[in-house]
Image 1 (spheres, rainbow, N blue to C red):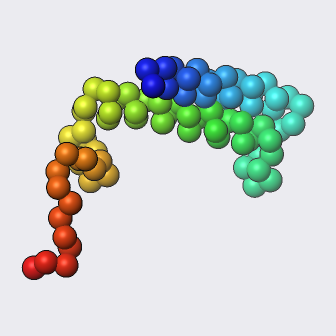
Image 2: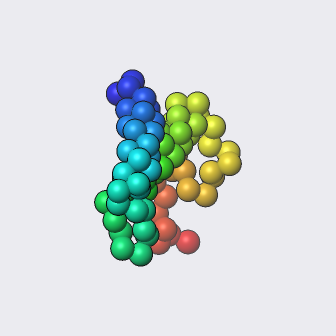
Length: 82
């Protein structure tokens, strides 16, 4: 579990580089969802996921993402009770 961030970021950078290198033979076109576009999109997504994992779960810096972060230590609140 300690290498998850490293794998996400390094794998994402590798996908981005491979996708842009493949662009010379097979252009990155979003409308067609070419294979090179998919590699670039997956690469950027992996890098962002790794960085968000680092900031939110490792560094516990959650104040900026209060609306989307769930605190697993609080009890569940019943939405049906007034």
